[in-house]
Length: 174
Image 1 (spheres, rainbow, N blue to C red):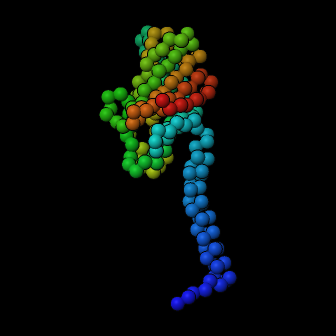
Image 2: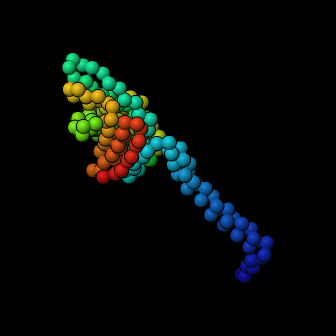
């Protein structure tokens, strides 16, 4: 049995095909919207996990004869993987290990310790690390003219953020 394709049925099929192609394009547009939401942050991605930092606050506190510098940026994790990702400081046995180094205006480096709470970034979500805090301690240490390098070690790679006193952020993946 021979079936003919009329002009009308051809146009219906072509229209349905064009609609299907257009809809598949709009589904991939979700990434574009997520990227627009992240534009106010500096970011570095390792696989399906993107680390973002912005708007830092620096404070000095005196403890005995040593000064400490506390560094508190806005830190967010966009976890596009299929499972939650844990984060914490050295010795926490988390998947993401957070460390830092403060360089003073004379070029001397001080290790920074992550003192925020360990946590977990849920799968498929953008998550703000609400208590993100790095602390460096050293005699005569002041925040003026300092630079902080924050590192997120994950899956054998590092997302590295550099923040100079004044708020200039850069990022890279090593």
